[in-house]
Image 1 (cartoon, rainbow over the protein chains, first blue to last red):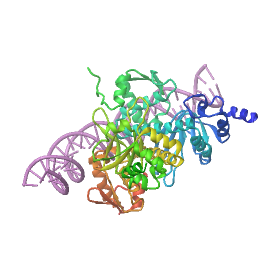
Image 2 (cartoon, each protein chain N blue to C red):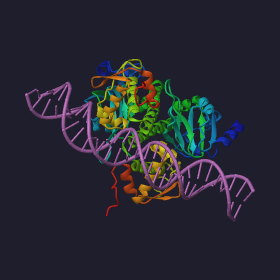
Image 3 (cartoon, rainbow over the protein chains, first blue to last red):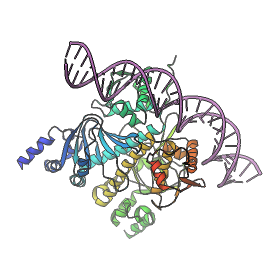
Image 4 (cartoon, rainbow over the protein chains, first blue to last red):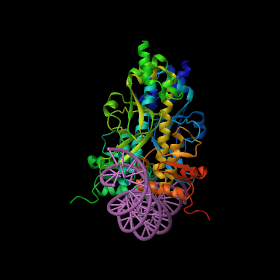
Length: 246
Length: 246
DNA sequence: CGACTGGTTGAGTATGGTCAACTTCGGTGG
DNA sequence: CCACCGAAGTTGACCATACTCAACCAGTCG
């Protein structure tokens, strides 16, 4: 048993899911962790790599440890859409009854995930109130977040969507809500597929935000927020003045 | 106690949440039903009516008994978006930590809802495995559904979105997946706000589907599906031939 | 019957998509 | 260390889809 605990420790030691108090594995007793660990498969995924289908078939619960995973749908004619983004701590439950496919997971940055067996996960949700609370509250957030995202896609202009995306990145990045510098994390074409735009439009849109002096582009993936209030306004749908106010 | 049971019966007798085996209240023991019932408020809501804010503040868990409820966001400049649709059996959990507002619920058809107290609901989810399973599986469906909807909004043309919407209505209406005649349930402008379009575009789009002989419009809100396979193809993103194949 | 809400039609326009050329970056190997 | 290559990103010109605005039509309710 000590041997086993040591073996577990190898897998889970230093894993954010365990070390961050807000995340799922931090809620577990040693015994529970050993049990879950023995039915879970931590994996590193390179950028652009799909999450192994075999892995998902076997263990369709995917917890994100690090990096960004996208839920990708590809239409029959090749249009690609990223329906949702999953970040550190998110739990993706790919079980879906019947009919429609849930889409495939792909890494949009180098990522580390941990796929959990359905049985162990369901058992945790059943028996451990803290783990259940974390799991359910994560689902609730996903639902609310998806609603916000639908608003973005349904009714916002390209610059507005990009402003919203910048805030999403800021909220999810380690530094949290205060930093001035935001890492966009995704490539232009992934941002495009997520925000319902084309890469060219993303490029032009970011330029436009820069022209309005709301942000400054720092290299390809870093953005400095210059006017957080105005950027937030824009993200929330206040139409920006097309030209610089004289 | 018998009195109480009778009083409950008045409220919950014939309620779909109770009589439909797949829905939440059908999972409850008599005792649990009495407890939940005494902390729940069934309400009828007229079309276009927002769900009473006071009701939501007090009991932010809303179960849909009948009709269609929309989760509405209104941007600062008046643009309206319907981020999600909730149908019979759906459970809306409006709790959201901090920051952003979850949006407001409005009835898009005459509807009947039941608002449940957080305490009773959480208790059920904790203690009754069947109720928990229903609640969690409903959340999971909402997440998957939201993902599909994001794909619609992100990458599909107006006719494709409308085809997808027709299937959503068919899937959720009582008859189920087989009927030829689908009730669109919503008004044009609500369809528009939900599918990220304008009412005029909805009108033109439906006309276009009719012109392609995929559907036939039966009055303002009924649609007869003429070519289910082709309509499904279109909804899934196969670009339709712009003109009738000669 | 008239007022009203919801829906349709039409003309003109703007936003973002498409396609193609070009630039920048990052890595690899000579 | 620099030259080269490919991937990613940007720019520009053109175009299409869906938006806007306005008028008009069709039911419905008092």
